[in-house]
Each structure stands twice: as structure tokens, then as C-alpha cells.
Length: 80
Image (cartoon, rainbow, N blue to C red; front, side, top):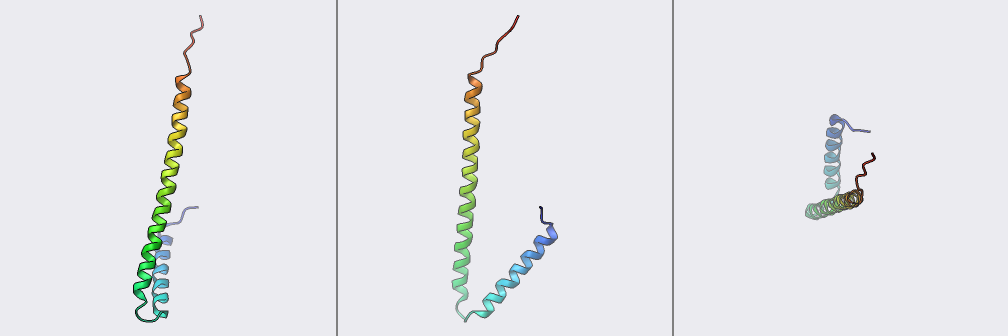
């Protein structure tokens, strides 16, 4: 299922309102803590996605090299 651009825009707007609501409920001075937490969560997410991507690429490369090795062992046979 693919989400339309309009729905993505609406979700981003809703997330922004939610962030403002949470900040409004916290005591003054806590904004800095939230900024640090937000930054750390974003870094963790990026690290996870990068790790998964590199794992997929290395798996695909390993499968590709196995296929190349199999192809090298095949010899052409001419039937007369």
C-alpha cells in the first residue's frame, strides 16, 4: 500500500502539532533535553537503516558471486 503525498504531508503536520503539544506540557527548560533525545533517536534510526541496507547489499553481493562461480564451472558442449 502506498501513501499519497497529501497523506504524508498531513501526517507530518500532525506530528509537528503533537511535538508542540508535548513541549507545552513540560516544564520550562526541558526543551533542550527533548532536542537531545530527538537527535539521539534520529541517529539510532539512521544507524539501523544503514546497517540493514549494508547487510542487504552484502547478501546480494554474496549471492551474485556464488552465481558467478557456478557460471565459471559450466563448459560449452557442441553436439554434432
